[in-house]
Figure 1 (cartoon, one colour):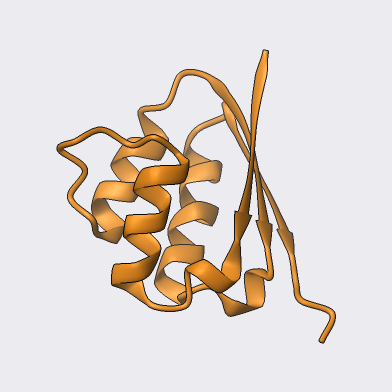
Figure 2 (spheres, helix red, strand yellow):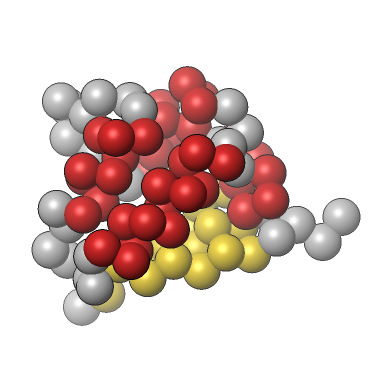
Length: 87
């Protein structure tokens, strides 16, 4: 079964806000380090199939967006779909 997450890029414009949002929405562990390296580790250790929609991906902090992209290349269980804002 694939777990689908729809993330709002407007909630991920700045690093600190983004990591708090991701921790809550993706249900990341308590020990999550609230940084790009910790996000990469959590995503690459994931063993469930995840489909992650990144809405307004052009608004996302570049380092976080790159982390999602690299994690999806590393972990075959993760599929990332980037959708830029129409505005």
